[in-house]
Length: 111
Length: 118
Image (tube, rainbow over all chains, first blue to last red; front, side, top):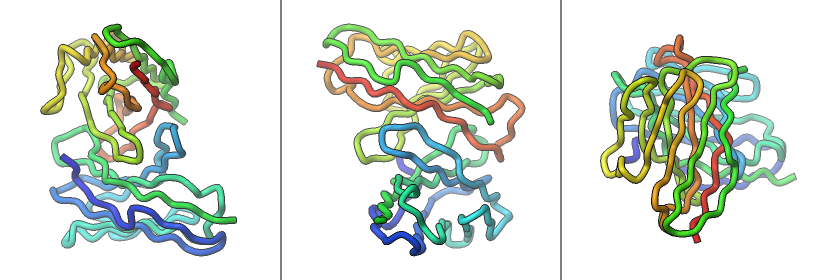
């Protein structure tokens, strides 16, 4: 079964705008990760936030984690057309090595 | 960075035939690899966990006799779709974590295999 739900399912913005994607999950986690997938390709790891962290930055990416609400958000600032892709959150559950993926957000950045 | 090579990237086969997909970790060793399946515009569903030198662990609802997994070395896992049917058509993606990686390390993904069964 799916661990997480993401919203929005699809997001279309203009270049230069910020994009925010949200993810909710159901179980206790070791960490939460965000991945990017270009159409028809594999996934690329973007950022990992541990369960004891609340916020993390990497370049134009900002991730927050609220374990009390079992939710996370990914913010992409100053978006570019090349950011067009699907973005997935994934959780690492306690005692389980595999990742469980959310439903994903399809981001379209218009040039 | 860690690279996972998945082959073939695309395959078309006839119903009833078998297809083998290879997943290799090129610059690291992986005692565990994961096989996912993805339907169009959908999320990734974990099919099975491939363990080097032992039997794979399958998720509930995944037929182990249909999806044969072999993890013969620390750098290679294979998924064989046996007696393929059109409903097996999908995007299959493998992933691996460095054997020295903890739970707090990312997975490295292959580029996926698009399987079409006619």
